[in-house]
Length: 331
Image 1 (cartoon, one colour):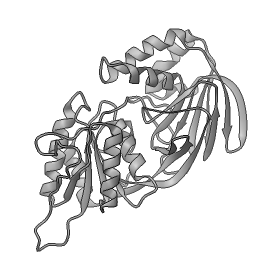
Image 2 (cartoon, one colour; image 1 turned 120 degrees about the horizontal axis):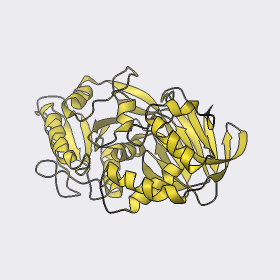
Image 3 (cartoon, helix red, strand yellow; image 1 turned 120 degrees about the vertical axis):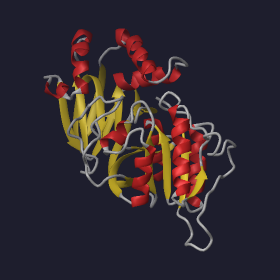
């Protein structure tokens, strides 16, 4: 779902454009500069308190913190990029997968660390990297310890310019649902996504695709195609259970055309990953993927992304994420 980035109140700076900073004593070395972006509405409103706690912890640890939050994702991105230009070496985002997506697009391909304080309802990207969930104290400890991990990212050239994703790019039923959910003012959180599924399912039909994986072309009718850098998306749906965000390859899942009743029977098994055993599920691996279809949108990291056709490239080590060095995942 789309996440609105906004400055946390009472301590994180509620006036967009005004940098709130905290530094070490003048006698010490210059403090490390961190740009903080908070979505106060994430996690059903928990994001505000988590953002305030994160700011307090970073200040107490002696970091120089610039509030880069904004009243929209576009404004937050602009302010985070300005903070990087001003010397911020880490961008710390507080929220769910929408905020992770913002942080990925700000830091990918740059010599800047990405720190995630997971405070959303899904938190798939954070879970796939074994990061603390709803625990700002543990997340800030990772920042203090200086523990980072190189992670691959997907890069796409769109009409609006270069865009990145860290988790899963999907084109098909999932993207149609994401697009509908983004247009719905109510309800919020996971319930909005579930309602969008119920509204789209009766009218959805298999889509004719052309899919190219490292030059090998396939024409098929499918329910969805997922280009996965990590294992899960959509709040725990393990779409490609074996996807590794540090192997330089995507796992590309194709759910070939099936009936709606069959789709309903397969769908629940995606949360355990057992769907990969279904005879209509195919998984390929590739570093470069081209997706073609008429009138089909794509979503990435749970955010509306761009319409097809798209060419997606895996960029090894494009992200430097503050994370445990282990690849274990938080459940």
